[in-house]
Length: 274
Image (cartoon, rainbow, N blue to C red; front, side):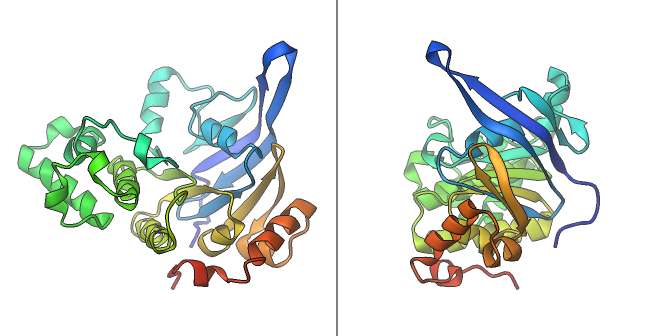
């Protein structure tokens, strides 16, 4: 359940325009504001081209907005010094869409997770290996000890996505941005990944910004939904409010498309919210 405390992350009137060839411009993000609290999942929903990726990059401080501010733990990411930004980024981690390109292919699973461990040099070798094994066990990659020497290309797509989650939580973040983490996964894998994310949230009280084009997934997984269209948030509310009583015509089209398959989300993926 979401905390009533101050937000972990907040975007405040964020806008971003890209300048194209021949003097053309593209307004990718238009005056967007939202917040995410500890233990809460906010789903950002929209079709390709809606501005989700641009907003995700701004959220992760990979792209600077033209206007507005983004704040992590009530500290500005826009106005932070490079040293401050490096420190803040340890509290905010991404899980990217394409796990096949998310890792250095020359590093083993153990090396990747050691690299992501804060102050790894302060651990003894046995303690560091035990920590890495613990991370692998937490994301249900087993047998964990047998995974240590493997390379990313030797893992299945589902295993690589679990490794991406393990690398994210290795930093002990308070906020995770998951950008289409189920893309390309089959039905059985989707439910397992979502349940894994739910378990991690319960154990660590981490906040999620969950980016997806599939509003039915958001209905099952998120506490709140933001619907993005042409760079703007056109509708937001609890998952139940947005899905059961959509107000904006674009949201209505997304919901209708999700229902067209005539399968409830619990028939598509097995998510345990109990």
